Amino acid sequence: MSRHILLIQGHPDSSELHLCHALAGSYVQGALEAGHEVRRCELADLDFPLLRSQKDFDNGVVPEQLQSVQSDILWCNHMVLFFPLWAGDMPALLKGMLEQVFRPAFTGTSRNPLATKPLSGRSARVVVTMGMPALVYRWYFRAHSVKALERNMLGMVGIGPVRETLIGLTGDLSASQAQDWLSILRKLGAQGA
Ligand SMILES: Cc1cc2nc3c(=O)[nH]c(=O)nc-3n(C[C@H](O)[C@H](O)[C@H](O)COP(=O)(O)O)c2cc1C
Image (cartoon, rainbow, N blue to C red; front, side, top):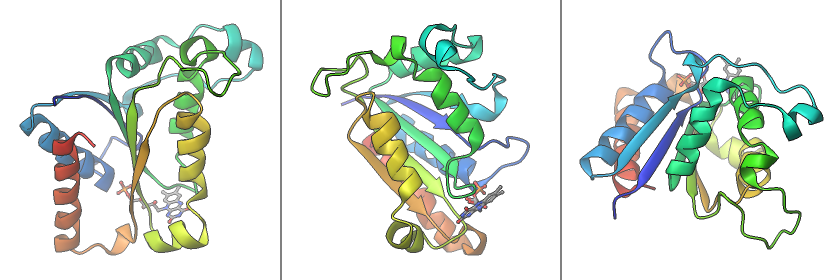
């Protein structure tokens, strides 16, 4: 079944081609070949302020460039986020964008954990690259920042299931290992997963 996929490229640097961009390119290629529709959000190209107060969070106007991200989230039934692990977490630019976008007026204000949320029915995948071995991040660090994103940000607004692809030792990837990852991402794109 054809899916509406929103790809959020969370790498803060678009001045050169990073692994995150190559992985996203393969994902899009697979998705388009399989007949899915894809919209892309290149975070590095957006200009928006950080959220600074509860008052703004509750009642402020969402920065103009992020209003179209909200429309794209409503349009999609699957989101895929790419980002490099920076200081043990997603880059601040991506966190800043999610804080701005997931306002109560957009995600629903019900405190009932069993209530259906406006964004329910959307699945997601988080693709994270990192310098350390992925196994160390997963088992020693318990993938804490990715789990926080999955449960506390995406899960809280009703997005799920959320799956993850963790790619470690990025500084030491051989050409064939990089190719293997590109193939994996292309297949995931084809599956709309
Ligand atoms: C500011 C900064 C902070 C980083 N912090 C971490 C970290 O905490 N853990 C880690 O494993 N790698 C860390 N790295 C390495 C990046 O995760 C790695 O270079 C990146 O995933 C490679 O993917 P890219 O080519 O798409 O940037 C950091 C890199 C930068 C630039």
